[in-house]
Image 1 (cartoon, rainbow, N blue to C red):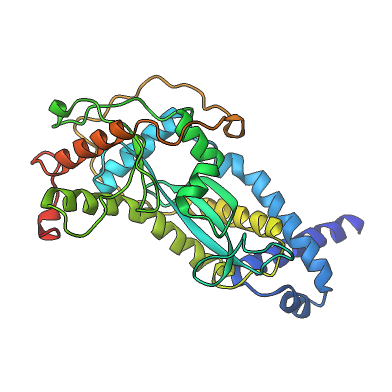
Image 2 (image 1 turned 120 degrees about the horizontal axis):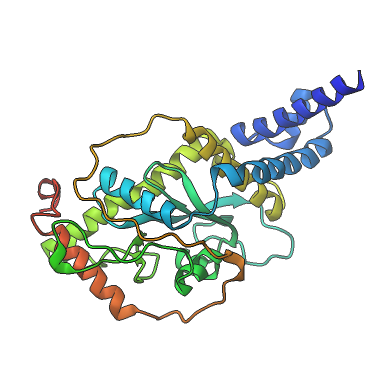
Length: 324
């Protein structure tokens, strides 16, 4: 009898947690619906969310290694037409109630309080790397700089594949594998951002269009995440630490649901980029911070090389109907 009572208790704990994550109902609403104390629900939900994260992260969101980055790049080329792209990066503000005595740390310029979910997404809308908990007042670029992922990217210890030549553009030489982001992120050798301004020449508008095609997957992933878990549509009345736990749980559950979902398929590339030898990824939290302005000139040259490729016959797609 005690065994069955324990099973029922565990089952109900998961029901409370999934109800909270999927519907966004308050603790008081859930406690009223299931006839339990709201303080009990407030203790159960973070603990179960933490257990979900710890049990599933190693299976559905493992730290990518070099071969994983290469597989992501292949998918971006097949599905999004951007070669050597190893992920799209962006930040999402998760609304919270301002913690006591926090001042303006969590204040977002749009008039709310929030923490930031910084995510790297692959071409199949799965989260590959996330960083949760940055103050809402910071920019996406500042959040990236302070995160373990950003420090590893700056230090060159992420295991990103070596530079590779693009078939049909051998004259450009090896081009770096890169992440794509919007104007909020800095231009780095392994991080491409669009050209600023509106009065751009045609070839630069083509680059911005192609980068936007690849970058929109992260916006789509955030949209699917928010549609599945309605907590993102409401203000979360929890301590920021508990909000961080719940956000991590929703991200890994999103990957679990995407794991068996139908995926877009395309014909394999005629000349795939060869896979470089694999090397293990270093532990992200142990990375030391590097200078913020390294490889700026090299990053500009890399973006110009991609711009030249997208404007060529070999790298063109149907952007001529879009970019005028």
